Length: 102
Image (cartoon, rainbow, N blue to C red; front, side):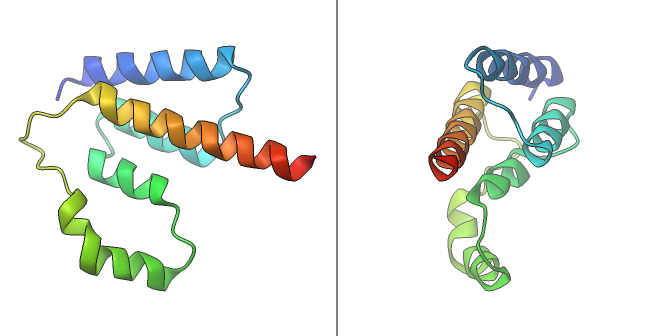
């Protein structure tokens, strides 16, 4: 996948989130920037948004669900769709934090 296309999609997402007043935590920003630069795979990015509650949950996901969710690096997939999923994750997390703060 094109580094340029990944970078453009991530930049648009970051602009949208900023416009919406959503703050992005450091971990999410590192993952997004790494993906945009080609240092983090789409599979790592998707695993990041799973936000496992425990190590055993992560191990279970690896053992059962991971193969269903792994994207072949040579496959043709939509960068925009991946970025939309990441944006939805960040928006949900922001909403949860705001609800807890009330």
